[in-house]
Length: 168
Image 1 (cartoon, one colour):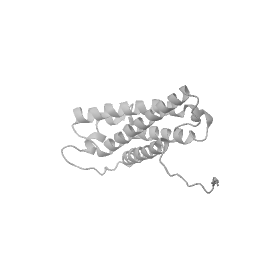
Image 2 (cartoon, one colour):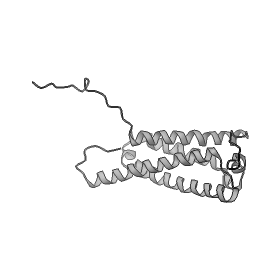
Image 3 (spheres, one colour):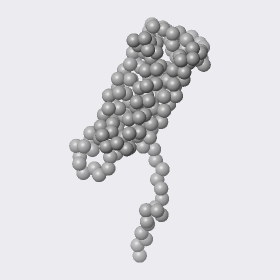
């Protein structure tokens, strides 16, 4: 005697996907860059750990805190907003289902390299770090790793057409 489970009676699997983790870290980066953008927009001081290694005001008011006259925090907030939109469109729009992970990989790779440049200047030239910038940089690093894994998986599944579903 065989017992057949219907789809409704089948146990639900709760698991975290690479896409879901990427969305989580993009939202984390949006929150931190959004906070920095808010403090820049309202000209208020940031909440910061003040010690020999951290001095948010020194970092946020340095010559590297603006690019072409635009505060870097605004650019970061827009960048992470675009990443979130791309991630959300991956589930609904066929163009982004096909190419979204590649677009995201290019964007996050550039974003990570720019974070590296800013962190280098904070450590070497300013000799202080901003905890909010570091948190955003860490989130960006996780986004890069997750997106790289998703990109490799997508390329491998494209090379092996026997894979029925997208692994991401």
